[in-house]
Amino acid sequence: MLRVVAVNDKRQCVEGIPLERLNDGDIAWYWVDFDCPTDDEIRLLDEFFGFHPLAIEDCLHFLQRPKVDHYGDTHFFVLHSLNPETQEAEEVDFFLGPRGIVTFHLAASQEVEEVGRAIGRAVAQDGTDQTYVAYKLLDKLVDQYFPVLYKIEDQLNDLEALGERDADIQALTEQVYDIRADLLRIRRTVFPMRDLLYRVLNSNKIPGVNERLAYFTDIYDHLLKLTEMIESNREMTADLRDSYDSLRSNRMNSIMKRLTVMTTIFMPLTFIAGVYGMNFVHMPELEWHSGYFIVLGVMAGLGLGMYGWFKAKGWFD
Image 1: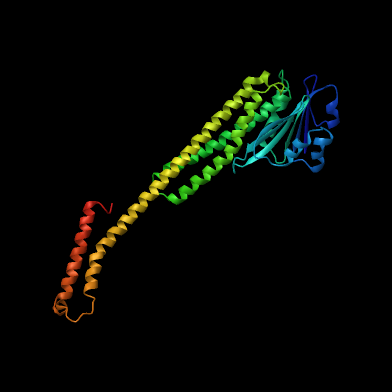
Image 2: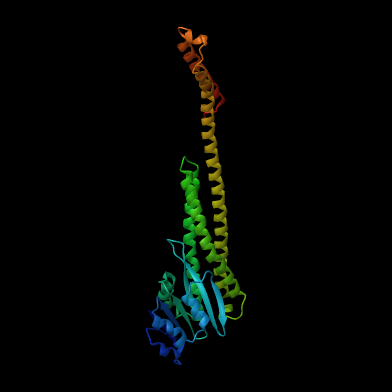
């Protein structure tokens, strides 16, 4: 589906016009959004707009890293949004040219929709143009990273609290590893986005950036904060993992200690039972009238005495 928004010389917003009208002299700038486009609509990237074949190829194949490429006076951006449920990256691309901006995304994008709803009100402002739309898209995409990381921070705080109780350490450890995997996926998006903004701020190739330098710098500051949050959360997952490993080791040592104590108690009892279980003929104790009860009494006294001694030493704690 194509969405066409054009702004004329009178700063009036006109929507739904044919693409051919974008070349009229009264059109100051335009925004064309390719939302889940069909094959026929995809061909317009080449046949109508004449974008570089490599950029079109990048639109159709998911890239692992956000980037910006310069093709003459057209600047091609590959950006990532984050799915709030799965933390998976979803690609949003746009072409920023001298007369307009063209956005492209194979899946529906909430951020693009929000910018689209706000652009009609924004065109009345002085200086609003295609670079402003690019700024708003970047800003919306970056702002959506924060709720994802805040959710992960809440999960880590819950895991830290559960680790202090008598919880299933194995299940908690698996959750920690799942969160580390989520952070790694987010890191693959945030770090390249930070580098992309750095290139935009330090490049004079993109018109309109210097006029809005404070706004783009604000996005870069947000990405720096996101970077710090990711590294902090990764360190927290490492600390939780080490804490759970230590707790699991302590529990295992406690279990092994109890088993060792029980084995030690039964060792002399097993020895006594083994001695009197031998089938020798000349064993005087076997002829005693009360020998059986004496041996049982000795074994019971020995076992209870050793149990009391170990209990006093705190080996059952």
